[in-house]
Length: 461
Ligand code: NDP
Image (cartoon, rainbow, N blue to C red):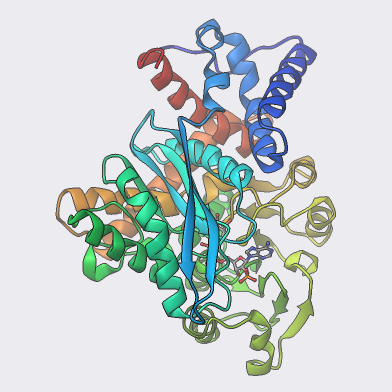
């Protein structure tokens, strides 16, 4: 259908009061789910002018329908530790939307996981997946299980117990989970092994699999690489690139590691990494050799990032601190939600940072986003900048369905093409006319239009 996207809304306060009334209802129906409210509010602010300007969207109650999950699975996960003690965790799968494809989104194992956190992540995932141009719906799942300090055998037993409850709800054209915080290659292996045993099928019901049994080349790298490609696209509009720039990166897990790898490959210098205990600052840059050491530390020995300064004494450790006080040109928040607050954003801007590309989901608070956008710097929100991971997961599904494998070069070219097209969509829908691109509005609008039209076309179901 033809819709009005550049809504010429004369009465801005009417839009604002519609957003407020809408949010009052969302909050009343889902009290206490603060991260979910935050994610919905950001989208509602972007798209309410379009909803107002297009009666078909209003009448079909598109926004009201999009904020209610199609289905939520909640289950008990009981497992036994190495000492024989029995533990009980909560397991979840939030299926937000299957309008444009099977449910798709990661699993998070972290003690902070609850229904509100997973609803925020599933809601974001709907829009992110829409932006990828691939036929993927949106979901998220996980558990409040804390993998830190657990043995391999305990992780395996937990994953098996988790999958025992989930297996009959997932499948290659139904719902395809992947990794997220606390769920990497090791966990996907245990989850897939149990899925295969229980169903008797070998098919692509999970992505992020190992290369030897159905995984895609570049899937581990994709989110971090994609966030750097997105930064490069934003910088290209100013005739610049990441080459020669200094970057701060938070986190030291999957996304952070491959962000640093790509920054190094493109001639930038990453000077920080972090975890929930603190930040390391290496003024000489975290080159490939140091990064290989970090990968061994985090992925094999499962140690803490503080150990970096013992190995590389030129670096310093900021205990309990985040990286945002360290001067940089570019920043890549790659750890978790709300890890950049208003004063962090102000510090980044004051220290000369002019490009933020989010590897994590919703890492900046609304107040931080305000600071970054008011400063007029390049700001790529997570649902656009970190979509490379799910995009390559989509390619993994595609390879599994066709029993084929793409080369690294092929996947990388596709990933770059997808990040470029997401960027173009953001520019198309987010340009203010004065040269400034509101990437938040651009990403939300481009994603919303596609999902909203699918909802209209598929009727009242
Ligand atoms: P990992 O588990 O591999 O790494 C997470 C990193 O973030 C760790 O260094 C961890 O430190 C740190 N971290 C987690 N929670 C906190 C916290 N509350 N405060 C400070 N640091 C924290 O996860 P990923 O790298 O896969 O995910 C990172 C982010 O990227 C998440 O927001 C995720 O949703 C997002 N993302 C991931 C994708 C993927 O493909 N993996 C795709 C798209 C987005 P510690 O060890 O101390 O907990």
